Length: 219
Image 1 (tube, rainbow, N blue to C red):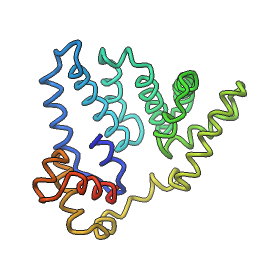
Image 2: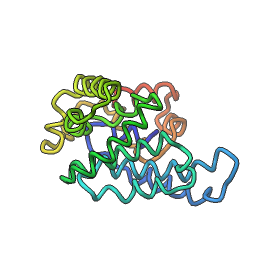
Image 3: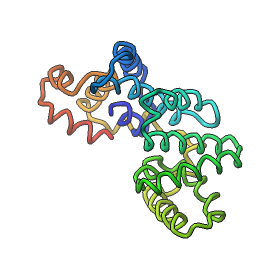
Image 4: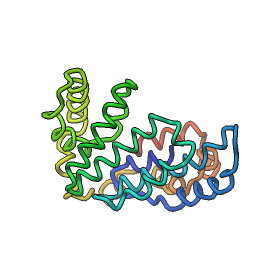
């Protein structure tokens, strides 16, 4: 969850401490079975995949996605595999491999449609918009086409022109940081070090609820 929040912010976060901590936990619990901790290696791999996808353009982001998909816990999770397949499709699209992108995307979207998970497509963000625009004219299934078109419209409404500008216009990190209060900057710094909300609350002498409020304002 912390990795997801940091990736959603409009400036480049320091993710290495969080990822290193997740890798440590994954190694510690890699042999756990039949308990909640057996999902920790998969959570760590998915965090790596999300970071690689978010920070990559083209095929360099595929290795982390492929690794997450090969874990035993992932193979039985159809929704997770569909999410990873859609990420693959977008990376192929951005690399100019349109045929492979279309093949992967259609399989992923049919699966998401069958599962009833429109949220899956919306969570992918504005980078999915060029892919959807290319796919829609060739989809003959009216139900599937209508479902994808509804998702495309909602994505476009949420993100506006981001799909066109994200690749060429880097965010103004300094300006965003300048809008944060000193306390928000302090909370952000601690949060990016993989500290828990309770630990941050003790460090800055406020309640956990106040820390959550600061995090909400930051993101």
